[in-house]
Image (cartoon, rainbow, N blue to C red; front, side):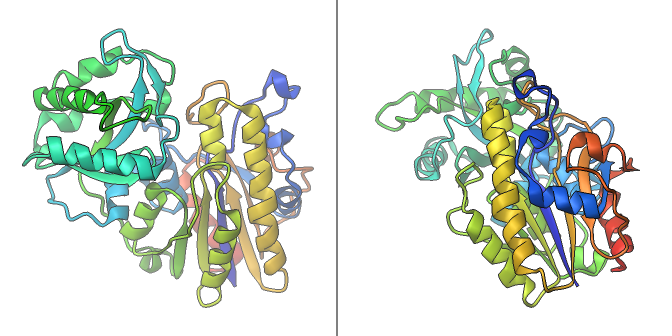
Length: 397
């Protein structure tokens, strides 16, 4: 039997007046997810443990069956695993955004956590220039994808910097950066690096993008996860545009499938992800397909775009996979990692709706896949138990 685990990042949300009181899930055109929900089991899973920040790092770790309260060390270390960085046990790995701020002062505001969704071909040379000019024995810059990069602080886990709390920049869009600058100021070396980077990015001979500051956050020691196959008995792969998901795959010994043309945005290569999933399933039994688009639209505050992203997920991911595998014995888990409500423009800790469809699943009879309908079903207080519960239900463990 083949098991497909389909994730629409940030798909969940809250009712909106502009959608007549519907959520973006309810307003989207999702006949395939609706049918899976009606003929399968729906429920809610608490993917973010109490006291932890509702990030995709925490929530996707839970979806893959690993308790974030036990294994999570930070966002940066997960993405470092995706890049295969060689790290010392006491290195501190920061996620590094290229951002746009009104000004890097106590009365500044975070204008854009992504510098206008800066393209990789523009951001990579900037991070390489940061490394050339500012890298040293303590700090090393590593280019990633679009606005998402890394900063490794040698032996930084042994310093007070490990305990600094810096807001994820997508949490403070159009909000003051005062509290974060105060946190940065408690680390003289990091403070100097922040302003040296600002000055370098202000040089128009080096940078003509909207990026005018670096933003280190999500720091932690290197990640260590149990082996996925040994834990769950599944020979699986992850398929995603973002290093976060790839890092979870690498760290747990899964296959990481790269798909050309994936962007993490609304215009990603949907067909490439479907083809990659089907090719992998020819000889293997599990695939985790992650789509970033709904989350990015939620951060952008566009209900229209988020409705479209969810509709595309149904039409261009769920539908073709169902059609291609209609004659195969398959089981399905469809969910999101966290809510990204349009009103908030960032993640929340709401339990996420999920549907299980396959052997052993009772029909819920709901009229569609939504937050409200999922609330009428199963409740899982520990989101990292969703995968194990599904495997038991499907008779796969």
